[in-house]
Structure formats: C-alpha cells, structure tokens
Image 1 (tube, rainbow, N blue to C red):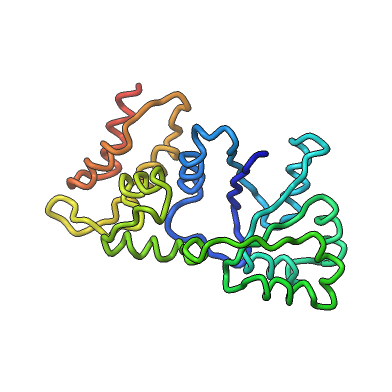
Image 2 (cartoon, one colour):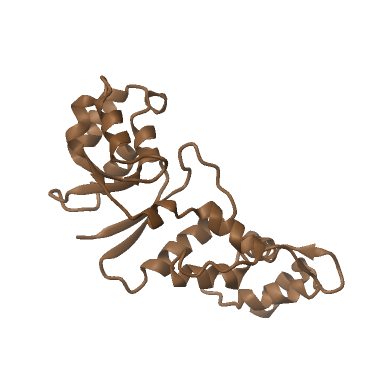
Length: 236
C-alpha cells in the first residue's frame, strides 16, 4: 500500500491563504521524506475524476485507488454545480476509485448515510465507506494553527515536527518583525520577495544560496534588490 499526499493547484471553493503553493509542496515533501510508503503529488485539477485519469497513466492497471477525504469534501463531490453532467462523471469516477470518508467538516456517520440516501446519490453509496477518526483529530484545524502561530503560541503536536520546524524557520504566519531601525515587515513576505527576484533574474538551476542569510540581511535593513544583485554578481 502507498499513501499519496496530493496538493491541488486550485482547491474547489477554497482560497489559497498564507503559504505559497511551492512552500505547501515543500512541507509535504518534508513530511514524506524517509517514509517509504508515502509519496507526494501536485495536481493541476481540482476534480477527482481528473486526478483519477492522471493517476491511471502512471500506476499499474490493477492498482486500487482509495481517496481519503472529510465529510465536507464528500458534499462537494456530489454537488451538481461542479459538473456539466454530474451522474456521468460520478459513474466514471466510481468505476475507477472508492472513497473513505472521515468525520471531519461537520459530519459523522449519520450525515454520510443521509447524504448517500438522497435520491440522486443512492446508486453510488456502495463506493463510499465511513471511517471513524478520533475527536481530537477531527477537531484539528489549519486555521487554528495559523492563528496560534500569529499569537506566538505553541503548535507542538498539532502539526508534524518537520512542518513545525519549517514554519518557525521561515516565519510563516508570524507577526511582522522590525527591520533594522525601520518599520515592521513580514519575514515570510521578505522570503517570497527574494525568491521572486531571483527567479525573475533567471537564477541558474545549479546555483546554491543561503536563503535564510539573505532574508536576515533584508530584515536588518538592507534593500532586497541590493541583496539579490550582490548575490547574482557573485555568480558571474
């Protein structure tokens, strides 16, 4: 068995907040690193039927696909607003995959049964199985974690240790810090600004640099453009 952690470029009905897509992908890779049964994927499409079509191209034909989701995702899965021809799309999806639904997003086993009992959904209920997760796990919220970091509170035990360290290191979700003698600025915004400038300058793929050191220079009052140009001059 393999656990595939899938990051969507655009999540249905959810706005991207805080971390960039690149850093979200990096956090998943940090978590999966060294775990032989775990892989990471990036999806350009939000619908599960599109994910299935992509996965079928890279996995053996007889591979069984099980999507592990919360109740709120199951509700969206059956919502006709997201399809041109809902029943046709769902029929194709369930011909290739099944769903394990945990008690998250405001719904327990009774809510799952009720949703699957709706007239248009009954034909698909054999492809959906409810899985019970602990109350503690069901209450975990990325919003709560972000707010705790912003308030300077402890998040140990709420996220994997690899991701906790990464969040602290890059200043993600943290309050603005003073830059030298100047006004406060978000360390994470500085990091993103430096990376954007490096990419726009055509940074060579093999180039090595210490991003943390560059961020520290800017936080001490140096201009980001000057820091980046100084680094690029050193490559020439």
